[in-house]
Image (cartoon, rainbow, N blue to C red; front, side, top):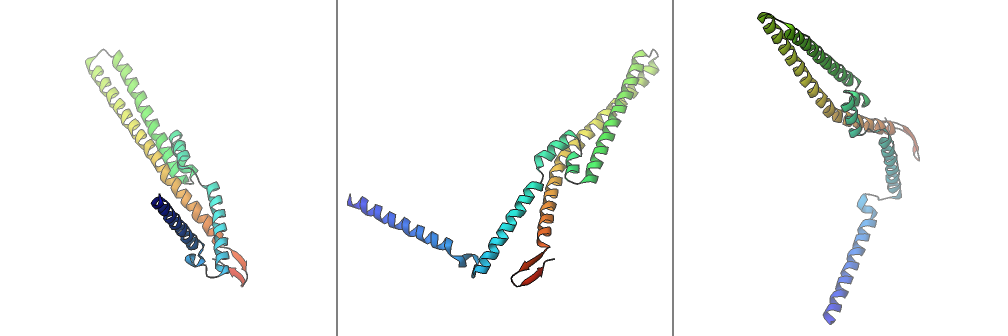
Length: 191
């Protein structure tokens, strides 16, 4: 029993000593380079300024998932929303042209297939069947290309959104640091 009490006292003293050392290390202003109260005050002002910048950034940034959803609904919408206007327009127009081409080839294939079904002469039967098959194949190739472009568009919306968010952060930061401020020592211009 005496050994248990002795071990408990030793552990209690050890934990008390460690806790005291941790408080000393944490409260040591020299550790963070705060030699003077002015440095501490400057650090606090900088911290408050950065917190305000983060709040502004949170309001202006865009979510990747939202732009991916936009791009999956309408190709190029995610890029357009991320202020990559040219890229968004190119993707949208390309997708529209590919799908229109696929539809036109499909219609032509169905017209030739109808002519194939009505033909009586073996030469016409072979000719219309070959045209219908070629147009149908072209329609399917364009449809596949449209699907690939659609998937690449969704993937690209991730990069476009991240680039927009980076640009937003740097713009906010530059606007905050490029200002005139009045300090104790006089007026300072930051460019």
